[in-house]
Image (cartoon, rainbow over the protein chains, first blue to last red):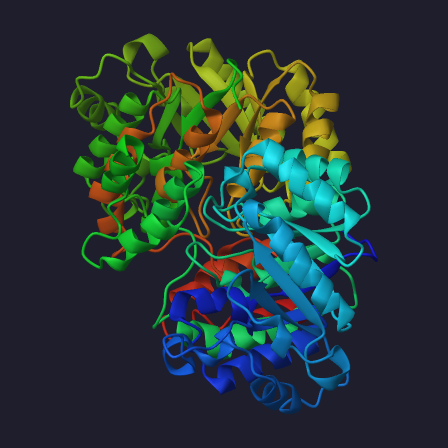
Length: 317
Length: 317
């Protein structure tokens, strides 16, 4: 598959950080950043940019939940690559302070991705307008679309379409519940009600479909694709960047540095934290559930593989 | 997805046996058989039916490489289910003695699946004719279609179409190299040159696409679907039966006993043998290679996760 408009966004640190409270070492983040430079992905998302507080501290919640300019600069400056991906951070509606955001040309951030639920779309658009005023590229990522009431989702899409400040509109399969037919179904809906927007797609791998659903999104005309190195991400993880780059065949990409950083940094990391498909996440995705129950179940070392027990409990709940 | 013609074939023991030289305990095979009865899959393949010799012994190569009637009967009789799937065994062209096969009504076997490479198709058809004469349902499974010269493959398909004795023609992604577009491409070819045959599909999970490619095969009109419990199978394994049954939504199927046998028998088995996706198999699949190099690489405990080394070696080879 080759289409020159296709862009790849690596969200390894941002989605991976959901597993370990963003406690990645700076060396790890530097290695990931270098890999994304060398692989020539288009955008790299290095974390969230939430608001610090007495309770919500860097120590407890990790530097990459806050993405201070100094941290980002240190990572970026550690790499001597000529090619640089755009640097993105994620905003969670309700947990950020946009008044502290500097204009784009005064800091290391290029893109702000605003994550919101359907009922927060208006607040999300408001945030995006302020980011766009400061010069940032912007995306709105509507979470849990598979669990939304469709009329409300449609209303939100219409509002998004009116907002010139939104560069990309993201279809997000938060629960890993989509089959390819749902990717197409929602994709058609997004195109119908927000026809002026470029689309992005963010998958989860609960049913081993993150990569294939991303391919379906490509077939359906989506041009901005999220992926993570080795598929790291909350629960069953995401679309594997290395598989996606192999598929895309675009000679501008280079998969070799991705395999290198996996071998050197992700294989050891797997000794510490878990991600990827298993039957607990498969059940959770099939039932279109928030992954929190599945993650809680997996955290119980003694019973984490008891998929029959989890299935019965989930069906009866 | 619901289509009443869709049938599911469980090849857990046959494809799983490729990992452990068919050294499954009888209790394990009984548990798998019971699960397939309770789940109401259509066919269960309990092994290969190869020819024993002084060198090629049951002790060394496992009972399920030979599928003696007595072994099969013991498994079947151990279960008191009313519903029974058809029992299949696999024939490898050149490694069987069809003269020893009894008529279908005198033994426990219902279906013979003949696996052959493109250059063996004529020999495969010959075997199938003799099996059909004895009353068996038959399939021909053309291995490694992705590595075949297309004109030779087409010639074989034309021959298969002429043979009334072939009930099912299988598209087999032996190397786990297919994306959905290849499933469709080969599916169209098989339908064009063997229009009278019902099609089957057998996937491998090298690129996390076994399940999604099986869905694509369904969309493309294939009606007999191979899957294995927990995705067990050579290398990256196969399409997970539990994911497939969830997808099919046909109320005749019951996924619960599949999760039960996973929890009770497959979770412990994972302590002993490995199967499923990892980046080594991903590279092998992407490069359309026979999995033997990847399996050899994975067998080296110290270096098995060195995907960068494997990538460089494979690209340079």
